[in-house]
Amino acid sequence: MRQKPDLSFWKLWNLSFGFFGVQIAYALQSANISRIFATLGADPHNLSYFWILPPLMGMIVQPLVGLFSDKTWTRFGRRIPYLFVGAAFAVLVMIMLPNAGNLEFTFISAMTFGLISLMFLDTSINMAMQPFKMMVGDMVNEKQKAKAYSIQSFLCNAGSLMGFLFPYILTAIGIASVAAPGIIPDSVKWSFYLGATILILCVIYTTVKVKEYTPEEMAGFRASAQAEKQTEAKSSSSGNALQVFLQVGLVQFFCWAAFLFMWTYTNGAIAETAFGVDMSNAEFAATEEYQAAGDWVGVLFAVQAIGSMAWAVMLPRFKSVKMAYALSLLIGGAGFAIVPFISNQYLLFVPFFLIGTAWAAMLSMPFTLVTNALEGNKHMGTFLGLFNCTICIPQIIAAFLGGVILSLVGSHQYNMMIVAGVCLFIGTLCVFIIRNKSN
Image (tube, rainbow, N blue to C red; front, side, top):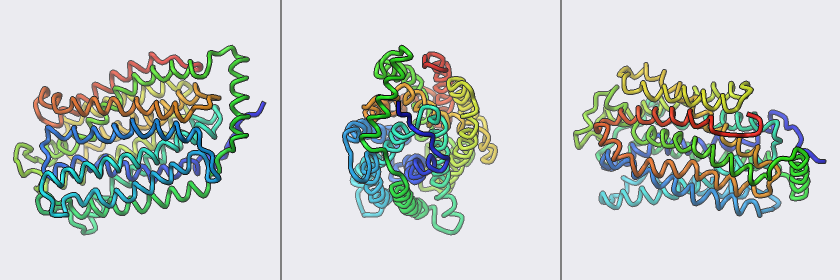
């Protein structure tokens, strides 16, 4: 029987290196979308609605990428064509989005332009992101899956670190971080331009360095994996995958709701607690303090990425995937819960470092569990595309409910950090429901 060979560290690295560039784009979006739309004039209670588009587009695009790439075989590869096209479109939109306030639009026109740009940005990022997870599923054997996804998690967080810090660094070297009301600051615009450049270079690197298996090789690996499952008297790959899919999906629901609240409300929370911004002032977004808080949020998210990179190195050392997963979410939940009680901007490094542990686990543990259950299934791309719905649906629900929950907890955005912590604590308990074959 033919088994997938062990891959060297550098082959595993090259397989995911393009994810570094994709994540820069995703980090710029995550850290700056609320800031951009608040600058354009959006009401804080409506900010969560702008976050419906990213997961909605992901839920539509990623299953389609999985479905079609399962059936695609070209001389450039199976997943790589989708990766490259998605990255190319992302580059174009990253140049458009931060100019939403610079084209002499009315308020409605600027918001519409921004929303359409955001829709296309997230569509293209999702199209570029999903093939990396599928390539690990295709090319890495079960023994190395946790290591491969940990490397991917490390590169993801390294890209996040860079993307989060761009506005702060550009402000530090003299590029303006404050602009006229309704105008996106130059530091944010140039961050997007720089991120777009790095994205396309990283994707070109992976495209050149990675050679996907041929259809014949993949057929041999699938036959071997299916024979092994039959020998071990296991249930069918699809049946086992469906069970793990649903169980991990429950954990995913609470995790991704928590991080949607973080991305939506951290700007306002930090502006209130550490920079003394009066968020009831209609002109709060034009103040120097609010824009400084926006830059500092990038720094805090960078600290989160550092915590995530450090924890990603530790995750493969756990004997139990489930224990690593649960502990990570528990620590991250504690980090969220203490954010509202810290008014010193530097002491905020502590909770955001802790939040990084949850993020590291979310980037690797679910895909380790699901792709191991899918080993030998010829529809792996389709399954992983559908699995992305367990990431998108909770974000959509959280985005719809965000304004309502904010009103219920007193309209102070820092209270949403406690809500996020509670979500992760519930997710921790749900980990123990998962029933996989080895952990």
